[in-house]
Image (cartoon, rainbow, N blue to C red; front, side, top):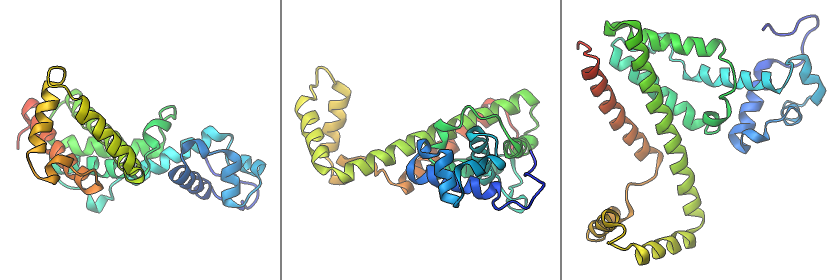
Length: 238
């Protein structure tokens, strides 16, 4: 829908959207209210209704802004199907990780212009595969599912790491509990894994580091394996 006309607006939808996304990033999606957004832009709450009809419009604009971040500039778009698909996957994950609330808070919004542009880029990325439309949609859907699942796992892992760092006594108590109650007859595989780790060095015992860099490496490994498998499954020519 077009911006309001008739008089010179004091604010813009971009300002309102930016304020709403910023609130969600710092305080969580539930903190996004018309009153809170209005305060952030320095407006009266009722004045926002000149620019949008409801909070649902604000949420739709938030989704469109996030999908705008996912778009790859035309001069940076890779040529090959695999490189282009990987670039879209990588960019999408980065944006989802930067806005961790977006994965579970925007599922009721109807797709807007940037959603169409994102889908267009995904179709353009797979155009060189030579596959029929149903197979291209399958490829896009499987990669999207992997990206969303990986981002959700990464967000949870980083949240758990922050909680652990803020409460080392809780971590110590948890480790003590499980090392005491990890009975080999009930948990043979877990017990064997623990014994193998205990026999190694401190790094091996602590498991893979839950850092953005380590999670990004895991994502790249999984993405490469997925694309290898899809190329073989769908018989995509190199």
